[in-house]
Amino acid sequence: MKQRIISGVALIIGLLLLIFVAPFPVFFAAFLIIAGISIWEYSKLIYCDNNLEPNKKWRWLYLTVIIVATLYPFLPALITWLSIGTDKFASYNTLLINSYETLMFYATFMWLFSLIIYRRTDTLLKIMHPRLVAIFAALSNGAFFASIFAVRYFDGATQAFNVDNSPILMIYIFALIACCDSGAYFFGRAFGKTKLNAIISPNKTIEGFLGGIFCALICAIIFVNFTSLNDYMMTSKRMIAFFMLSLITVLFAVHGDLVESFLKRRAGIKDSSNIIPGHGGVLDRLDSLQPSFMFLSYYWLFLTLSNFFTF
Image (cartoon, rainbow, N blue to C red; front, top):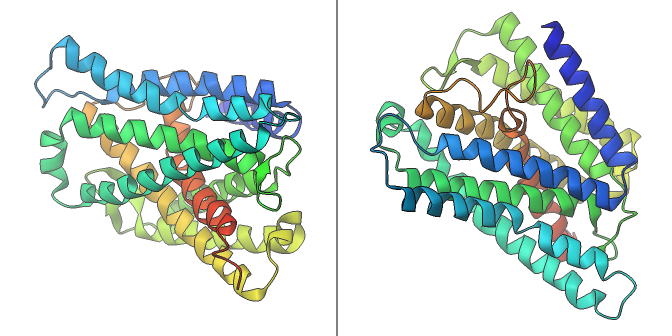
């Protein structure tokens, strides 16, 4: 537990420094490293004892797909940053917006498709084809890193890439999911009786799940009323829309945690790796954040850009 607390504090401090202090090149490099580790960890989740081991050609093909999709968001972000102050900025900014929006659109359908893990879970653990896992890993990772850059550097007001953009939306998503996870843990320990899905994750309960949602909504109320996040809310209807999207984001976060638990159980491993002392691997920390960032960034930033929330 002591090791877990020390690692957790170090991760929080490092994250805050990245968000508030680090210039774009450092932020870019840090998440490039995280992307590389996530690719390595996903490569261990593709196969399991229940699936026949494919030849090397398929193994490298699946891994290549994950690598390309994961690194894809980095290129338009870098090109757009390099083009700031040039007459080509507008065209590169459009490239960034269109590529990210397309990636997150398809990833949304992939996350909805992943709901099948709750039906015939035992059977799926045995027959889930490595190709489906590779597609999931590719879209999940690609959409996550696209949404990271969108939330941190995309200015919804000017509809442009902005290195000085406020980090409040990024901080909000991290806080929202942290409150959900903490609430689920403590409510589950205190009141948990009914298993959420005993096969995938025997420790998660419906009582903990409801407690996590309650704590997340408290977090949302605090942020909207006492931080600059309130600047996003121009009407009461927009505020209601934001709260509804936040609620769905929390549901996606819980689902993301269960999906990764499903993949680890399928692969016969406890943690995606042991690179973070006391916490496991990078994917063990990103499981809830991947769909959360994707969902809220796409349905708030990009639909706002399309004047969807003009009421």
